[in-house]
Length: 428
Image (cartoon, rainbow, N blue to C red):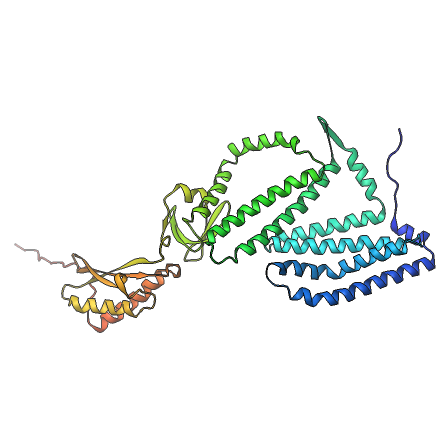
């Protein structure tokens, strides 16, 4: 059996063994010229790239970071082709090209990742992993063992019908899919930045279109990447059927939450910033994600509520059609109190607070609720238009003012009292 293993083609060994002094000096000069030309072109382009604003600013920033090695690589490739017309020994330039290509690739991919994903430890892990993978690939290419590794991965294969799958095919497919997903995330981030600047569109609709665009781009990226890697999509029909069964059973809740998230965003019954009460939880809607909605309570705690819960249960939205809400502060005064004076004091306290609505039908009112055992129960009814600022702090401010004003006016706030009659025991 013939051995089809590719030979080792080590670029470093060629550089040290085959290059003569004259050829090496010429290549060093060409490399220096490429660096000089690239540096000069970068200086000319940098001011123009810095003036780009808006949605293209992120792309301009990425080109600035990778601009110098990219321009040097372009000039080096051009000069290498020209030098190859009369000199065969180009080992130094052949070594410099993959190094510069790796540097450009790392800078561009890291820049795209930082704009496509939120800053986190996971992002740093991805950056390190991609950088190491590229440098390891370049090292294997320089050492000349990359063709042998590709051949070894291609020999480990199995056949499914008329299709042949190998470890090399799987590795190439994963690489292409990862790159396609990164580009899809970057494109979705670009679309999101453009949509979020549309002033006349509702925020929930903008978020719905953003999430739909991201989902569509991710699916499209995978569908394009698989055929590009040599995998026929018809082979995945079995896996698609298995995935459908999984969605019907094990992933039913996840799919339901995902669809519910789009329903919430499209019908705009719950929006970011609304104050809602659902499943014995009260808070402000901070995020509406594909699987869950984040509620932030007044004390800073955050609750993760599945989107399906917001669809299937009754939700009390305090700011759906209008932000105004009514607050009632119960107050009890003694039966000897001048109720007109007490009412004037309560209305004056409410009228001084900047958060209380003062005009129209929503102006503060004092209501007599009942004649109780210990005193007369009153209600100070006020309306506010900023429930997101909290109610407890407003209640505290009003009660402090009422307490101080009642003390000055000698208005008694009664408390339950018991009168005990001591009966002396009769002696015979």
